[in-house]
Image (cartoon, rainbow, N blue to C red; front, side, top):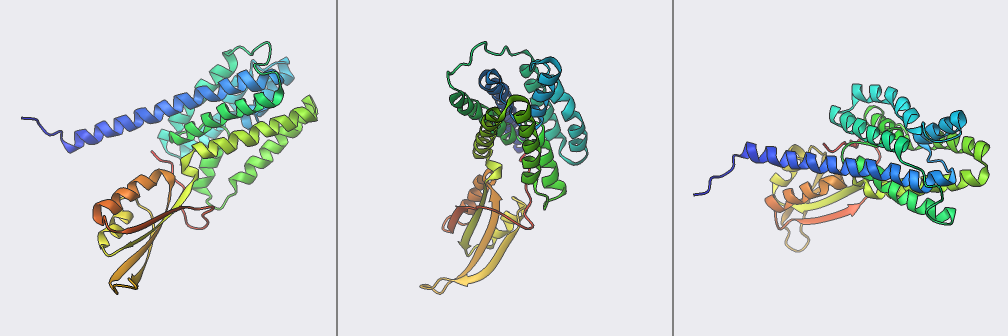
Length: 296
C-alpha cells in the first residue's frame, strides 16, 4: 500500500522547489546582465546608466578602463543594502546580495572583446539590451533584484507608495548620460540612452509583477469572496446584482492583483464556483491603496 505524504512534508517540498526555481532565475539573470554589458556595450565604450553606469564612469576616469567598474558598483550598493535590510524582506536582501556578487565579479573578470562582436553599434546596443533586460527581469521575477536603483524602487514602493520611483530613475539616468556625453561625446550618450530604454522595456515585460491585472467575477457562492480575502490577502470590492434573464441573485466581485497572483485567483474561482463568470483584463495603471508586493 502506498503511503500518503503528510501535508506538512508536501508543503516543504513545494516550498523548496519554489525556492530552487527562484534562485535558478536569479543566477541566470545575474549572469546574463554582465555578459550582455561586457560583450556588446563595453567594446563601444557605451554607458549602461544607473549605479553601474556611474561605476563605469568612475573606473574610466581613474584608470582609463572598466576593470574596476564591478568593484565601484559593489561599494555604491552597500548603503542601499543597509536601507533594504531595515525595511524589506531578508530574503530579498540575500538574493540581491548574491546577484550583486555575481554581477560585480563578472564585470571585473570577464575579458572585453578586442573587436566588437557585431560590426555596427546599433546591433550591439539591441543585443546587449536584450541580454541585459532579460537579466534584470529574471532577477526581479525571483523576488530579488539586480541591485542599484532596483533596491531603491522596491524600498520606496513599500515605504512611500505615492513616491515616483520612475522620476527618481529618470533623474539619476539623465545625470549619468549627461556625464557620458561630456566624457565620450553626444553620439555615445544617445546610443547609451537607447540601450537603457530598451533594456528596461524588456525587463518590464519579463518582470510579471509590474503587470497589474483586474478580475471581475460574477458568482452566487460567498466562499469565492471569502477565500480571495483570506488566501490571497487582496482587497475585494463587492456589490449585489442579478441575472437579467433568470432574475437570480448574483454577487459581483472586483479584485486587482499582479500577474503572479492570477494562477491563485483562477484556482480559487474554479474550486468554489466552477460556473462563475470570470473576466480577467490587464490594467494600464493602478493608483491609490494598492499594495505592490515582493513575491516570496
